[in-house]
Length: 324
Ligand code: FAQ
Image (cartoon, rainbow, N blue to C red; front, top):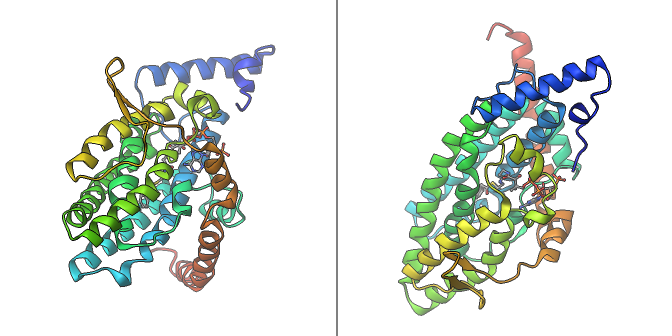
């Protein structure tokens, strides 16, 4: 866990003032008040939010690549339009989130540099390949489904700009979930090749999707700060459990099997118990050694370089027309 000098160092007057500010800040959070950009906030809160929001923004942007890969190969015009709209939505989410991060006093270009240098993380799930059309359905159903479970509480988090961005984002993610589940349903009701394709896709994505919720609570180094200050309202494991509970019924409804022999309903807890997650795989992916990490970074750098002229033109235009 990162140190919290303001709270612990209360030896001098200045530090005492700081401690009082922290106390007042925490009282506001406990009372359910929103923290806004110009309000005083502890450095650790600012740093944690900047880290989390910027990584979230990077995830939305990198998250366009696996699905973008299928836009030209969508089976019908209707599917192409749906997928195109979804990928554009993800781009928009990235932009809202970069704006939310900038309210904390950072510059978007610095955040982009951190992504491109490999310093900043983005969601592990986007380092897996999209090998079949069924993957597009399964991403909408499971990946967006997991994102909704994880992000709906963030719409009630303590930091105003992040919470407000999440309201809009979650509405769009709900549409993504529906379009994905519809693709999955159609394939699951299709011919044997289609059924096999969608089951194979679920088999590949299930475990990486469970990893999206982050390490188990005992290994989640940031949760203590984030939960105390009501950025995260629920722990990684509790959201993962909520997702598993919901997914079991959804899979059953379309006669698909979740690839976990240990999945069992626990009468006592009312939850679906699930098997052991391969945390070694998770950390390998997070550290840059997943199946597509290199490709995602290559693409990110290429897109950044390809867009250079647009940024330069926009800067030149606003320099010539400062009133606009
Ligand atoms: N991937 O202490 P914790 C989407 C890192 S958007 C990579 O538990 P925290 C929409 C973590 O950064 C998906 N790294 O961390 C879409 C930390 O390292 P650090 C993104 C991960 O922040 C759908 C270390 O492990 N969603 O899907 C991951 O308390 C379809 C220790 O972990 C968000 O960003 C991971 N999965 O909890 C787009 C939601 N998990 O930074 C396109 C907001 C953990 O200290 C298509 N974020 N790490 O060096 C969150 O809710 C939290 O940040 C968590 C992680 C839950 C992701």
